[in-house]
Length: 589
Image (cartoon, rainbow, N blue to C red):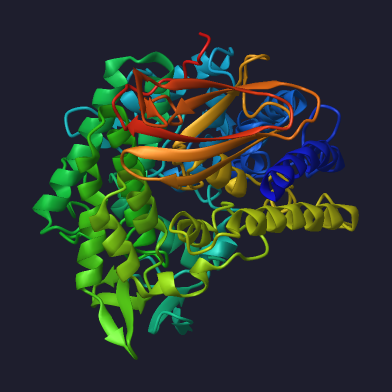
């Protein structure tokens, strides 16, 4: 079938394109051809993001070369940004979990690529120890209050005092944000935010006098607080559990998420964005539950509240097999919908809360509601998702490009699973192939001065895209980008070569899935070679197959399928979901 040939073509062209991209922008030692100095605490995440999906691509079916290069460039980025000062002990010295989350997904994917590789395993346990309280230097965790002690943390511990230099390379970005507080003695200007129906006060972070006032207020009010954004750290600790099975890691994730659930309950069902050193909401904010770092006052507002809650709830569900943890982000979605208002027949929900109350009414993007539905496969979550007006817009269409997180096509894939877009496999594979070609054209025509390019330059040229392959071959969406783990119905392994990913010549397509079953087709496009595939239930063997084409099987996470040349097979497999502890263990281990 056409989709199988297109899958193989996409894999082949990305195998070819990725090394060309890397050679264009790096020296022989793997470092970026870039400036000698990069100050401040921002930026290492962008280095890692430039290759973040390469080990995932290998785990899907990319070449051994891609796997080797992914490790080579991870080490190169780590070394380069250590020399700049952002990275210490192979982890960001201090920054927030918006950016830690972006950089860490690269590292998490190594578990899918080769879970026994060292020093990856040792690194993973060391990195987790920065947040569980087990590392002597990085004391980020307050076990008594069950809180992370600052929104700025890392391998050097909590950063209670941000220096003048810490924000040096990020001030220009923050200068376009609303002032962090209303009572600062700094000049501001009123700006109408497009699409948000609100006027905000902007303070110029680029003015040194203004910046000093803002910095003092941030340090005094925000830097000794726990914030929802820190819940993305649960992925780091979940990753350690999946590697080891050590129940201490599972307990930490659950305890931390439940601590936030209690804070939501104490705050009348709305997630506060700051918790002070003694565990009190609003302790450093004059009693206000809003005003925290990356919280309700920030221009993002609700997305930076719901996203870490969703990531953490998905992690806890994976670890315990208890999908009721999804009630935590569900409750926030429902609360915002209840606070919404209809404008010209369109539901607008508040995204920000300031001293003046709820503001920034705009459409609620379906992304997190969709992720919750996928994990639960619950009809109530489907109803919530389909109640959002945005699901009836161009969210349902295949678009050119891929977006920062390579995650802009949940909508049309959702319609494909419903039978509403039968041509989606061909459409998405065509679009992602076209994006590879577009990015390779950009690389060939790139005449920018490498000494002055923006720190995001390389990731905007990365020709590796995985969304279509994850959806079609694995029956799952792209991750929640700022630090989520992979959640898919199936993974595939080459039974002969004993490596992850689809064997050469093999295409896979998940055509249907629900709470109890999955239907998929495997195709061997080779006219000559027999191929053998081991299909795994879940990203981490957290599910089990219970039947194949109506015949009961032992509850196993693996099925082996032998494909003669030029043959295909359609399989309907019964599945018991979230019945196994998640593990990176491979079928032959």
